[in-house]
Image 1 (spheres, rainbow, N blue to C red):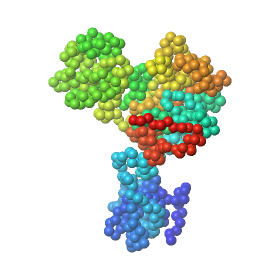
Image 2: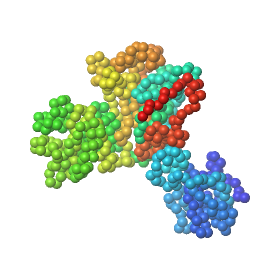
Image 3: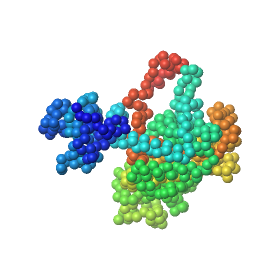
Image 4: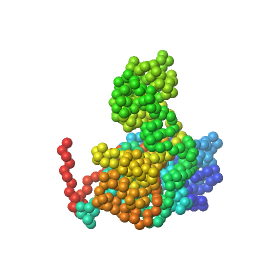
Amino acid sequence: MLPVDVRPDVIGRITCGSLTAADAESPVTLKGWVNRRRDLGGLIFIDLRDRFGLTQVVFNPEVDAGAHEIANKLRNEYVIQVDGIVRSRPEGTVNPKMATGEVEVEAHGITILNESKTPPFYINEEGDFDEALRLKYRYLDLRRPSMQNIMLLRHRVVKYMRDFLDDRGFVEVETPLLIRSTPEGARDFLVPSSAQPGEFYALPQSPQILKQLLMVSGLDRYFQIARCFRDEAQRADRQPEFSQLDIEMSFITPEDLMALMEQLMIEITENFTEKTIQQKPFPRMTYADALDRYGNDRPDLRYGMELQNVSHALRGTGFKAFAGVLEAGGQVKAIVVPGCGTYTRKQIDEITELAKSAGAKGLATIAITDEGVKSPIAKFLTETEITALTNGIGAGTGDLVLLVADQAPVVAKTLSALREEFGKRLELADPNVMAYAWIVEFPLLEWDEDGNRWDATHNPFCGYFEEDEALLQSDPGNIRSKQYDLVANGNELGGGSVRNHKRAQQEKVFDLMGLSEEIQMDRFGSILTALEYGAPPHGGIAFGLDRTIMLLAGEESIRDVIAFPKNNRGADVMFDAPAPVETGQLDDLGLMLKPAPIA
């Protein structure tokens, strides 16, 4: 029997990532999973794995024949306990790629704690495994070192956020998950009440009203790692349930909030990644400028290829497709794609289809080759116009100019999609750079054609610039909100605003949205009433935690940074949820299901 180790870690055992040359000749007990087994005819080598790393274990029949015999039965992912002596590796066998590569454990005993079936995918190797399989066996997927590293990154970032805010006087408050339905843009997840049949709770889309009420309560500085729920279409960066860093402060300006969050994101990026921040302090641009230059309000600033308005160069053009759009109040914009002047007809057709899928009626192209300009529209343009659409916008030999003519929203959406597509195709964005930026001065309201009314661009609680108050009656679409969004690498990370802290201000916005006094009180009575009891000026922000971790970890999907995510249809394939419930459960709630429509 080996002596008890005298240097256990805090939980009473040595881990597979902790042994060094200083431990040579010490007794040790290790527990973990068989990562790899190699039988060299006499000696058997096992790489033993736990969360903390790998240790090589050697089974020598001349040292312990019984342990060697058991080692013959081992397979990958068996859970074992090994008792042995730490030995320095023989000369020439040190593995510098392993933290424990200077030593190995000479086995003097082994216990198989549990066997394992053959996993549906490799755990000890990285690979492009089928996502559906990974989600079905998520507990095995999470066993892979790359996934464990992401979970550890998430843990450390969240801990850092908590410590950062605690040091600055913030108080963490948990808000309820069962609340009243207050529509905020997406469908609510509803929870029926058995105590009040026919009535429902809703899972919060965000703690928006609750955190404002905490400011009315005088708490001054609040934060929470909040769980939020939205019943909406899924995609790579969206989940029906997600986490956000939720913050609210009293007596602040947008400058106060942005400075605080900027410092937090700088520290997190520099402490937990090797990525470079492109610009400090973070650049700021207005919403209008972002749309004009990049076509969206979350631009990826790691590369150029900005949208350029060429409408002025085409005034009076004889090309009817452009002239008709300009006469109708539209615009013509272009992007210059570097090095793609040799694109084939098939490739041009592909990007034309992409333009059409974004809403454009078509796509005009001008290729600049060694032989000169090549374009299907060249014969309709003058030499002056062609020069303006090539040299005039910085295009050179080998480049491809893409032009879209339409109303401004269509042009922005189309060229934004094309810019992002070519950013990926040409690998223009440096993956080791974080390009943060603040987008400010969003419009407070946007016109809802279907509802024939004004709707909040973000949420109806955003404050507006005092100098724009006259526009509430004359020109609501041009009221600027005190909204600010933080974007990075083409993603919106978070957004917030300074709020309406007076009831009269808030009611003016609700009135413009077409909400009757009865509806206002029914949906938002709690916050409207609270604003009459000395509500301080306040504001806040919410950061998408999953998306932030996704960017820091260099992943493509937020599903890879959530322990147990839903798939791209919002289903949990591991638990097979959502799923039918027993009729008795529906009866208890006073619910009856409508028959599914016949296809």
